[in-house]
Length: 278
Image 1 (tube, helix red, strand yellow):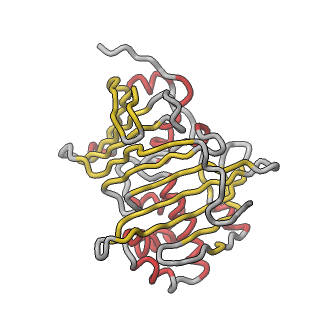
Image 2 (cartoon, rainbow, N blue to C red):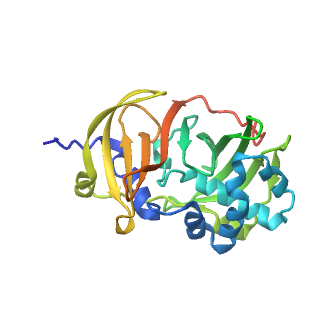
């Protein structure tokens, strides 16, 4: 019998992200639909899956400014929630970042999330990076997005400014954010699960070896809708931003179809790569 030890700050927030967004068992298109609406889902279908090759850069040239805005912030949202969970904002301090290897995703083979800085008025700068290899020529394809969030009293983060460097383009571009966009482009702060609920999801304690190091973790599992898929995540108290070390999605045959593993983390992500601040 495993003794349950609820380990401090992260304990309910990762799981709350899963349940609060109902992402377990959802495709990326479904995630887009729930966050951005049908228009965003259509755009994501057309372009989002092409991040891994050069076609993405060509297709972006055909987008209207309105679709460009929807595409950019919608994709940023999905990368924040990549892997089917919310990498909780509260566990990152300014300058902290995490880097992940990703298998089974249309949105890149490497994902980097960084909390860059807090402005004097309380607004926050974050960066999301996605990289993949173009199989036709083995060249790296890269997407970088930096966004300024305004935080409301209930913890929601409203997008106020976005700059992005798209695959195949040499220069970053400013993505216009309208007032109505700021109200619609929201990164939600999730509530917390009870200690009793977390105890029910806890399956054991494991030492996990990753490229970022060896971590003593607690393993949690959650069944998806109607048992079609299951979601497993490993968390630690060892100073990793967000506390998350790895995640897995499994289908009804217990086959892993998506996996994320921590590759690196640190506290020196304090500079903008796209020139949003000096």
